[in-house]
Image (cartoon, protein in one colour):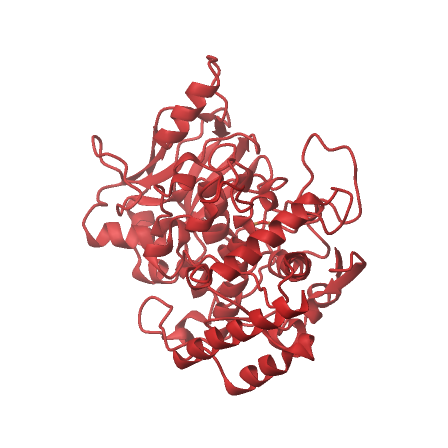
Length: 508
Ligand code: C2O
């Protein structure tokens, strides 16, 4: 073991030095790595893009080994794969309620801090299980690079070339994901609406924020998700999980190894948002956000608690950073980067600009195996507001699906299109596409919302929106319908989704 360790150390240091030539490293970091053999804990771990990480067979092998070892542990062991996943959510057939199970935070401003803590302790357990003291969680960067939007190759195959089982593979994913044929679409992974926002949290429904609605205590399934939680977070869960895969269910999601790389990316995007400045900041004055404590287990299997105040600076407090930090001079915002114009965000209640008719609350739309097309009408006045350039630029236009009911373990991840012309084949890379009906950790009968500012302004630019109505089309992905029809030879199609109406609102 020890000799193996030092050889790996040297190799890692060499690759680190060459990465440094490309502007990634810094002198203090290198010297801390040199000292690592003696003072292992003083080094800063670097979470790398999986595209970089996977160039190293040794790193992939360590990741696989860590996952494999955790999977061999009993589910009552806090350092096991299943125990860790059950902390995120408890499967319906599980009767035990062990410490910290089912405690993930969704739909509120605890979403970001809770998942950061969760990843932090998981990473330490994984590192120890892998036997590689230099292992850090990679991240899946579907956001920045269109050519990295298919599932990373090391996660795709059940067996490795030598015939052994690939611990990074699970069968429970959407059909095209494991084959590498389904790529995430830009409308599913875009963070531009989230990054436009300068407020971390909001306080009442109808408002929007980057990080979610303010609550006073831990919230497992809230309805105040922030914009980044909606997209790319919920979108990616839904596309990868498909109709009934693990990633689309809160209680199973963390059993899929790609979950951890997805969340590593979400955690990275939090830091990127902060680095844009312009008033973007963590809610350091909010005592609940700062001081509420959450329970985890460390790499020794000991119960620990942590609060928001302890996870604000990942380098100083948690000893890790991302390989692209600090932010290079990329421009992340649409337009000129005139962030001042975005800092004045109003808190007005949302106004309905267009809606499907509602017949005395009796209208219930049921989505099944064929596309459903709905027409939303608007007045001249509403139309003027809808197409107002300032509204569009500020990402204030929302498409809302109200009163949604769905089966969280089994519901088709419908694609949503705006003004898709009759006879035109739905294409997720067309300007009509706005994303999935991404019902993940979503309470029943609540409102699902999607930012459509970017899509509407693009359709308007192309002259594809005219007149006094907008249509919204829900399309079940063909491959999902095929799977369902093959699997359940029943007349009653599972996976249906019901809702009351669709509206377009602005918070201007
Ligand atoms: Cu707690 Cu991506 O989920």
